[in-house]
Each structure stands twice: as structure tokens, then as C-alpha cells.
Image 1: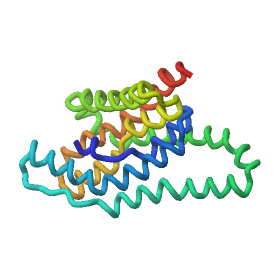
Image 2: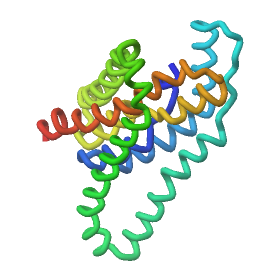
Image 3: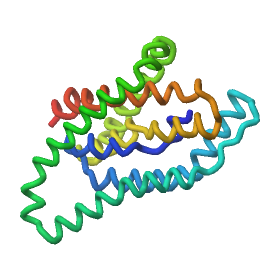
Length: 212
């Protein structure tokens, strides 16, 4: 429930860029969803606590943490827009190198995420891994195919599928550990933070590229 309540992660923008998504749509969705989650995350999390755990804990608004996410998303975009306006030729020449750099960054992040969470992944994957994997795959497929069924073009559908399929697991872990002070509640998000870096590129290569 913490993952479902968390907005789209920053990595969604990179995956969308790599696989032909409408990155402007991704950035807009990430910013808007992050702002909305200032209210919706506590509402959903507190309902889940009352319904499933009944522990009496309360999740307050995470305004500071969420504003950090918005800043991380918007600052590179503003810099990119400034470069594109001042030096359009340079911007076009850098498009391919930036795409390669994005792929390398994601590969490195994937390896580091697996290494960092390996102990948690190894001990808990058999218990919660299938549910986390199913949640991630359903999010990706629903985001893409429901968007296509609604008549949206492929770039928009790609942007939406990654925005829905790549949640901000760091925020979910932060809420679980720092707010709720519960290590077990952080484990699904920890496993998800590894799984999404495997499923997202596979989805891009096997589904999006094949249909391109």
C-alpha cells in the first residue's frame, strides 16, 4: 500500500526517454503526482494502517521529502530547456550521447541496487517477491495497454506505463523506516527497488520495441 500510494519515481523519466516515451508527459505526471501525494499518500497509508494493522500509527504529510523529489525532477529539465533554447544544434548533437549515458546510469543503478539490497532480497524474496513482481508487472502492462485502448499514441502510453509502473520506492522506504519505524514494512519497497530495474527494461525491449 505504501508503494501504491507513492508517486512515480525519477527513473520513470529515464526509462521513458530510452524507450521512446513522451518525456514531457512523464515529467509533468511526476511533478503533478508528487504534489498530489502530499495529501493522497497520508490518506491511503493511514487508511491501510487502520484497516490492516490497526496499530494506531499515523503518517503525516511528507511535504519536505516530496518537494525534494520535485526539485530533483525539475532542475535538470530546466537546465535542458535552457541549453536547447540557447544552443539548439548542440542540444540535437547531444541527444544520442545522453541516451547512451542514461542507459549506462540505469545499468549502474541496477547493479548497485541489487548489491545494496542483496541480503534483504535473498531472505525475503521467496515470501514477498512474487507479490511485488506481480504488482510491478500489472502496473506496467495496465499503464500501457489501457492507455492504448483509450486511444493514446505509443509515446504517451509509454510515458504513462512507466509513470504507473515505476513507483518512488525510496519514499516508501523513508515512510516505513523514519515515520512508521518498521523495518518489515520497508521490505516490499526494498525488493521493489531492485525488481523494477529488471522488469522495466525487459518490458521496454520485449513489448515496446517489438511494437515499434
